Length: 119
Image (tube, rainbow, N blue to C red; front, side, top):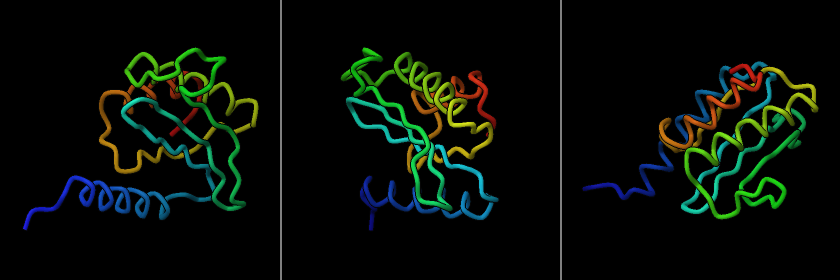
């Protein structure tokens, strides 16, 4: 019996998160969510259960509302790297969720690395 796309996505998300939890060592988690229209990212401290920084295409000051493409993802990656520096976070681990690591997710990760985040 074939699995639906949603079932495969949920299985992949659980697999990725469980592997990352084993390697966390108290580091923050850079969690990515991508929809058809927008992309958002959060820097989360799982030990305390607090969001340290976030960036999204829904923010008016970034001027990317309703855009989910590679260029918008790169700008969001640069923004989260800058905000992570303000929060005094230099190392984290990249939680892509159930999304494949290519396209906009890869562009976001590359821009965050260029901005100074290590993962």
